[in-house]
Length: 169
Image 1 (tube, rainbow, N blue to C red):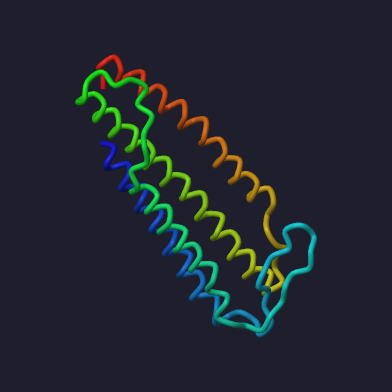
Image 2: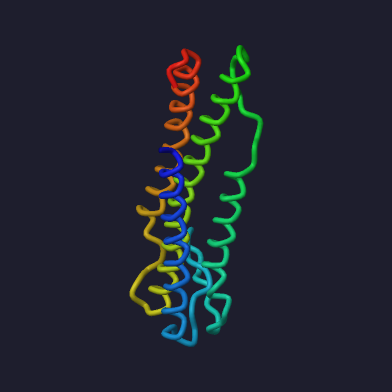
């Protein structure tokens, strides 16, 4: 069952990366000759430049970010197992915790992909003078969701360890 969840989250991330690239390739030929390269986050001036392939830096960084998160989900960091009564139980508990960590990483990555897509969309809108930059409420909301996932997954990990310690998993 966990494998299906991981696959679903991985496919969702793949779709978001593809969406970022499609949006970039669709928008690039339609961009004006002078386009923004960076967005005004803290009331600073928008950095304008001639239309250039640097525009594709956003989907490229998004893609590299995804590969980094994917690699992070594959690395076997030491797992806190609390007790080491039986080797079989330790291995089972480690696998459950690793599975939970992988789910957490892929879910966080979805929200980071949404941030990258929002930044890219904001630049496109700024270039066409139909937007004012980043929607701060959306941007902050996504970061709050990411931060809320931390205690949620810590609680799930504790419950998982407690449940597997009793032999119910």
